[in-house]
Amino acid sequence: MEVLVALAVIAVMAAVTWPLAGNWSGQTAVRAAQAELTQNLRLSRAESLAGYRAATYGLKLLPDGYVLFQGATYETREAAADIAVIWARGLRLTWQLSGSGQADEIVFDSQGQPSRFGQLMIGGGDTETTVSFNQGGYVQ
Image (cartoon, rainbow, N blue to C red; front, side, top):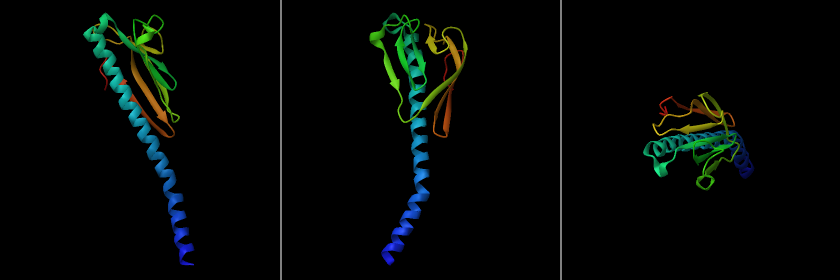
């Protein structure tokens, strides 16, 4: 009888904590994706500013990630230099950008200025976070 009571208590505790653990995992995945996206925006800007390989760099935005590319546009890029970042676990990317060029591309010129600027939203489950960057290409 004591064993059954102990198992019942453990079952109740597991039922209460299981959703909390799942939410924590989702928050961790969203935060990790935010940090990675922020780093890659800064990297693309820095490579363009430095004139690395005498090229400009940018990001092609996708619903479930993005592609780092070398070139003036994604269409005319150097495809061999692509680095695709595709998220798992149901993460999604949406954006609200101003500026010129393709609506789903951010290209940094040799002065570090982005073709488009605004907000990139990363969501997963019931968690969402935003990466903002301005006309100067600075991530906030």
